Length: 225
Image 1 (spheres, one colour):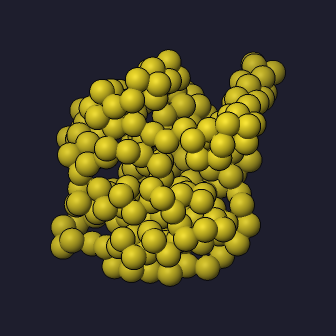
Image 2 (cartoon, rainbow, N blue to C red):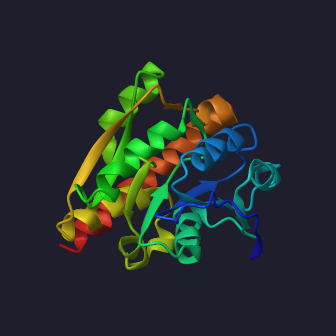
Image 3 (cartoon, helix red, strand yellow):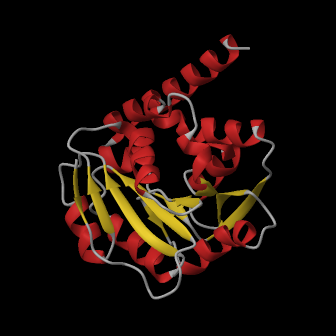
């Protein structure tokens, strides 16, 4: 694993580590990094999951610290890598393909945890694109925008193998730990779909893989009682 560091701190104490797992997101990563840095919430860390494009270079140019994985570990593996590199008690996770994201959105997402009103938050889209807003609210436990205690992820059994089921597993872990989750509306934020990024056929196959991974997680969870 290769790690390169650009200092991103603004002079304020780091209260969060903002982790952005990314795979071939050269078209979108810089805007997400810029919003993360502008939030002044702490260290911004992009984990490039063996990207074959300019994701890592563009994230670094935008001001993020970047960890480049030599082989693809999937979303869960990238998130876990970021969590292990973090030193703060709480983490913020962000998808790398967000549109319309601002520093204010991230400050709003972090506020309930930082003020002690919640132990974790999950961000839901609103007012952006109708398709992604609907999907966000229908599958709220799958959201990639969240703040939570670092130990929840580090102590999650077999986290590195969960791939796209990681968010569902994190939601379950928070509930099992009896930690309250506050849902935060992110007005004007949306996301680029897999079909838009990869084409209709490849995107649909990627979506089916995601659904299968989540289904398999639920199946294993049910078998365990």
